Amino acid sequence: MIVCQIVGFLGSGKTTLLVQLGSELGKEGKKVAIIVNEIGEIGVDGAVIDSFGFQSVELTEGCICCTLAGSLQNTLKIISKEYQPDLIIIEPTGIALPNIIKKMVRIAMVGEDAMYTIGIVDAFRAEKLFKEAETFCRTQIDGADIVAINKIDLIDNGVRDKVSDLVRNITPKSKIVFISAKQAQGLESLLELLREAS
Ligand SMILES: Nc1nc2c(ncn2[C@@H]2O[C@H](COP(=O)(O)OP(=O)(O)O)[C@@H](O)[C@H]2O)c(=O)[nH]1
Ligand SMILES: [Mg+2]
Image (cartoon, rainbow, N blue to C red; front, side, top):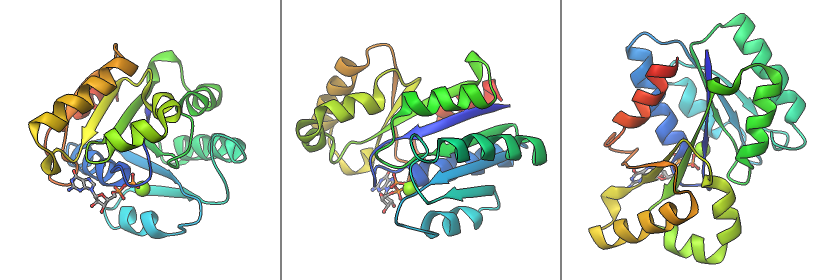
């Protein structure tokens, strides 16, 4: 079993991506469970996700990298015992810190190889966000296994090059892919990562 977190700002496309990835892997016979952490938007994502038939759990009373760290660890243990999925996808809030979540997951259950981080960047808003909140943007994608530059259906090649330079400078070792989560384009490398691992 593996655990994957999808990290990115509110509105960057995390839920859209996890539904696409989970649906595709589900069709291929993998058992997928989802943990969504939301603050102040109770039920919105859960309703969407449940309609795709995944096993999903929502944690809404705080942030899983701080106040809800214990809940995350308990939820992981319960899901893995009772549902025995091949893959658990975690959608943290837009303000969560991926390295802290990684640590929590490792403490709770898995070894070094079984935890993956996908960073998602909204290509349409990236230049603005990177200017306004550079340090935080760095924290979100630095060290990700793959950075998915999303919403390429909305941008031209000039923006695409600028955004990929920004990402490359922050996290030179991460693989970069260009996707449209909404149109299910460019998802193959992400699926490959999760297929091989789970
Ligand atoms: N045009 C476009 N819109 C997208 C894409 N991916 C997500 N969106 C839209 O962006 C908004 C936020 O997406 P969501 O998955 O809820 O983001 P989250 O807050 O990170 O979970 C929604 O209206 C999505 O339909 C994409 O690839 N292209
Ligand atoms: Mg979401």
